Amino acid sequence: MKYVWPVFKREFAGYFATPLAYVFIVIFLVAMGAFTFYVGHFYDNGIADLSVFFAYHPWLYLFLIPAIAMRLWAEERRTGTMELLLTLPVPLWATVLGKFLAAWAFAGVALALTFPIWLTVNFLGDPDNGVILASYVGSFLIAGGYLAIGACMSAATRNQVIAFVLSLFVCFLFTISGSPLVLDFFRDWAPLPLLNAISSFSFLTHFASITAGVIDLRDIVFFTSLIALFLTANVVIVDLKRSG
Amino acid sequence: MIATSGLTKRFGPIAAVSDLSLTVAKGEVLGFLGPNGAGKSTTMKMITGYLAPDHGSVNILGHDVETDGIAARQKMGYLPEGAPAYGDMTARQFLKFIAEVRGFHGGAANLKIDEAVAKTELAPVLDQTIETLSKGFKRRVGLAQAILHDPPVLIMDEPTDGLDPNQKHAVRNLIRAMAPQKAIIVSTHLLEEVEAICTRAVIIDKGRIVADGTPQDLLARSRYHNAVTLVLPPAQTEDVVAKLRALPQVASIEQANRADTSVEITAFPRKGAMLIEEIGALAVRETWDVKELYAEAGRLDDVFRSLTTHDAARARSAAT
Image (tube, rainbow over all chains, first blue to last red; front, side, top):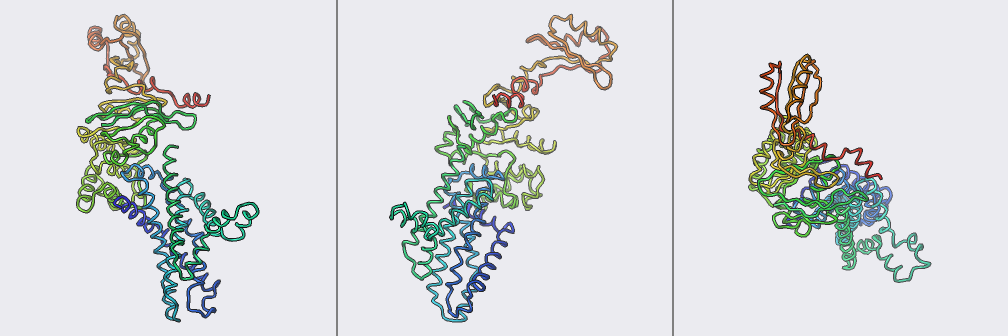
């Protein structure tokens, strides 16, 4: 922890030192509002819940999260601070974790700033706040999943655009792996257990079960192990590049 | 305090560093010289653990950099090439971050920062963001970061690159002042820097050590070592050259015209011979109209050129 904290602090403050944080938060909030009210017809539904609001989170994250993740490592490599960072007396896992947690906390701040919509729905009606809380937790977990993927992709290249496109692609695969688009590709030749495994990687499926109001241990385990997997890959990639 | 053994690193077909073994003791300031691309930076990156060597190992005060990296890096301060730092932080925030990572908090951190700031004369720009600083201040932020924890081992890749003569002088004084307590490696291609601060000079070429000695040892290898130069009006040149040639200790003579029409004559001694007294006496006896007369200790750039490969030649040999 003593290793993770300074890295986390620097990285987190780094978001707010540049316009990045403010641009991101504003666009995130505006997009959330636009989807909820115009695409999701929040008012017309006449139901006091936030299901339309949360339904768009994975899709919005798909573009916005790779945008925060892409700079995590690629920028350090480009500016040369990577050399400074990796020669400090901090274990590599702590640097990886600190950076990831900072980005995740930042995404959490953006998510928390959507609270007015929660106030609105409570003002207008009598929603199930348990479901809303579960949905927020689920949304935060999804953001963490995307971020871990993005961080890993960012470590693989010094070019931020490549990092963005790569993570967008991998995140997209994870998002829709339960959908016919992906499953049909495997259906003809892959054995059923593999098919089930692939569809169980779907962020949408896991997210749907959480937003239904049930925080199932399996969903939590899915997201945390996915994050752990990609952060481990992140450590391995950075370490491999040392030998390069 | 620093020991590398058999360090080797290849990038594709090119051996950047081959079987490099060095030890640096406390009190030594080792000047690491070589043409661009000779492997200086690669070696420093391996010593500090940023690059993993293909073969060989680095030991810092008993800690192996690969297997016991945290302990080794705690003992080290490192100024990487180009002095990278986080541009969006102020110098103070950046040094605070370094202090915390190195385990100093609160008052202890401030004390360490104040010391480093005083040594590198950073106080006037402490609250500016690093990206707005001049090259000289940026370099000194990098230096402050490297010496903040008063490490017993200090590795600096071109610490005075891009500094003006005043700043160079200040940095060299700082290095000299720290030298007795530390083992220091400084890479540079400024040869006067080696003479100014280093107790030992190592020249590498194509990843191998081609010379290792005190700056005086290296100067003694120069063909200018103990050579004597006279500056005279052109009219006397022929007579002087003839007389100098007659001296048994003179091996060869070169002459060059100066811009002000006077002529510069340099007499090179036979191995181990001293010429200055003899030539001085001769000039008095012959009443030559000598404007300048001096003996040289040697020229490092001359030694450097004779020991290392020109980059174009190196590129050719790498391509074949």
